Length: 252
Length: 335
Image 1 (spheres, rainbow over the protein chains, first blue to last red):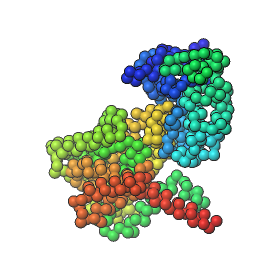
Image 2: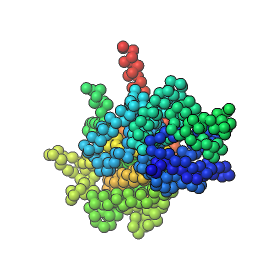
Image 3: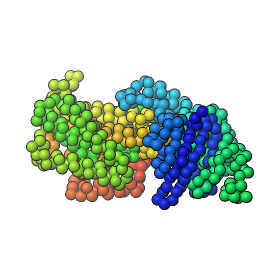
Image 4: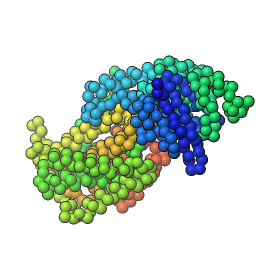
């Protein structure tokens, strides 16, 4: 069986600094796969490379066996890859539910003609999309905010909104960049529950996270980065006992 | 019941239609009509420009270029080559749309100041061409444009017509025509905004990165909205040429582009009715301040600056916010 996401010898240099160097790993469909490492280890750079926001200096990423080298982020979304951001990317000029409906973009193709005359088919699709978006907001736990302006929402709610938007695109694999950052213990517990639910649906989850308790609890496999290089890779138990990891990251 | 109507999608369109129906009662003479017709033509243009600037968050400082191209295409096609108006307007719109697409594709990769400069240059180049191609455009002296004909029915501002047995003058007939066109322009703009395409456009303004990771081809949508707003400008430019009966390269000038942008910013970026109000205010202002004619450009600059500082959301959204706050307070006080 080929891996859903396969990273081969990935390298990204910013000037003389190698943010990511010679990183290889594979994520099987249905896994929860986490990337951990100290600040500045290259985790977010790695995610930006996988999702096509950065172009690698060397190496390549395969999605379902296909090279993503020439693909734009929107083309990766068409192939089932979606993500959230550490620095949240929310359209503050829209309402909460419109942000989630934006996630339905690929499912809602309508011609310019249909749009300009607002034909019944468009109206029907919009009603269905709104319903689906409302369900997703309920699912991630921000159902109270449907028609709120995104700019009026709390930080925690926006983080969940971003996940709802990614799920609206019906991805095969979802990449979450530090979803627990800035959340309190209760919110983190709810997030853990949510990630489990997403994984249970058969969606592959890739996670960059600092919260060790969260990561160790839900991950099938882990990748540890340090100074842009792979320090260790394996199941949580192996990682916990790896002496290099303990020295570099877990702090002994 | 009333509340539900107020929240309905078509509220704005209804209000605008009502104003356009009532307005003639206050228009005393042909000069008033002329002013309002010019306002409506320019308002429809900025409704199109607002799609680009207000909703998609891109800038065009050369939009009068497309307005001017539309005006000259119509003028030349009907005047020099004897086409009738409707095909001239349609073919002109298609031609301008293609030009906008070809030009827009590369320059819309630019952001912020760079995009401003590039669109500014596009406007200048068009104005220079219109000025210099004397043999075709008449150069700086301008060119006459025949009266509008709608499927063989000539609509001259000096004519006398009868509509459903009612005697109306040429300017009144024009008033009806541009009212319908303005309502259509607003209706199309609203339909576009409240659709998946509209969400994609707004997401380009909100967060281009977010848009792209959920599958929005941001480059495509930027080009699309640039072309749509250019087509709006082209059609309205063509109508303007017919209405004025005479055009000069001033229709494509930098001053005109700045006027358009000022209308959008003053009225309220991203508010379709707001930008119409912006057009009305800025068209009326020179009438009120006739004594300061030479300072017109300075005034526009000042208005643009003051709006940006004191009401960045624009006139109509600011007024709406104040009124609804008052109403909430009042309702709260009674309860």
